[in-house]
Image: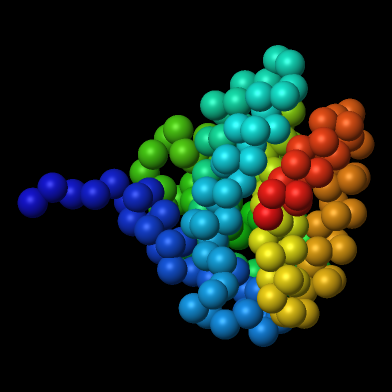
Length: 182
């Protein structure tokens, strides 16, 4: 029997882990976006956004988006308000699990670099994470779910981070394309 790398097994957990924020706002589990779906959408947004920014290592940014929520395979999807109250503790607990239980050094290194927001690509991946959440939130809003708070918060996070990265116009253009098309 062939053994499956443990990182794939933990990633597989994310396929069935619904994002808690949506569930708490009434989105049924059968419709709620999973953590893996979120990471997948974030990766594609990163390709689109990264291809519009000169000098970006798109591959690295996409890898960050694919692994950015791996820690949730260990502790679950903690909502943003709870995560903010826990502060850095949440990130450190997730990071501890990833560093101690994932056997792939490339994944561990990428995860640590993402958590520490070590480079432009890590910050871009975080921005793409916010954009993906906004897009799904807008879809749920059209279905009359009470997700206004998440949509509002993501809009603010996107504006703040795109300003910090000095790519506001690029992000605004991409959002106008994506929101028109959804």
